Image (cartoon, rainbow, N blue to C red):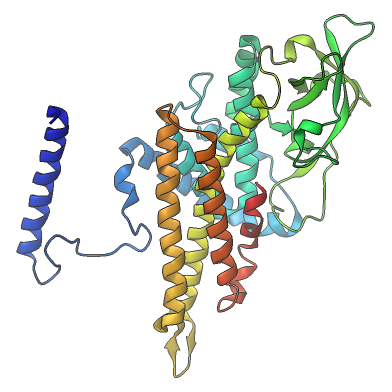
Length: 401
């Protein structure tokens, strides 16, 4: 046997012995080999899998979200009002682009970044969307594919929330078919070293407030998809518009819009030099989707917490709390189980990503499954807890993320 494996097994054995001795000492409180209490908020003790740094980061994110985001969310949702200051606040805490090394970013693990996302989405999916677009899409694109000059110039201010970013891939006629995009980049006929971008992107989170736009377009000369960093401050009047999309039925606490380009001039050095095709945008989307896998579990845990509180407080049928009845208990148990399993799966994939062993299929699996279970459980709560549905119906749209 490998000595290190043996030592690890020995430590586990010694730990188990200590637990058993403690159990024997308090036999009236617990059965041998078992903990004395069950924590419904962390059923499988997933927190034991996180480092002290990861737990501290989660605590910081949760405190900020509960104290600063939660008081805003009802007004934001009802009035479709996204507070731009939120990005600045997140930047001050190091929550933006958290897994990026250098450039003023925290450089933490993918697990820690996922736990941040989980805490933000525990409050609202729209807030998570705004943060994910800034971090996983705009910043990741520049970090992974941009020139050193673009990284040095833009990433520090994006990390601080001084600049807002968005990601323009989806088009009106090609929502799920980005390979058929119509946005085109052609060489400027009179200004050497520039491209002219024309086309429309839609359903773009953050676009109305963005200073930096990652726009994917086909080169007119080759037909290859290339990425461009479009800076609002450098666009002449009339060449770029970012109108907001109003009257949404969900994700109303985030701001969504379009990017309309009409021969918008972009310096050639703002084009990503190496990446071509859909590998670029899909790399960024995979990063965001793993965050959504964590985030969906935060939203589900919030649903569970609200439903549990209601079930304990609401009295029906001879003054009994709803939580006394097995049908209600099953619904709560199903959600707790799905949230625990989903968090474990997301954590495992995040660890594999940091180890260089993750595949896109893994991310797709865990994102799809976690969104599906969050959606199914929130719908299930709509029957006995219909009054709670309005509080978290943003979760219905998780699968669109």
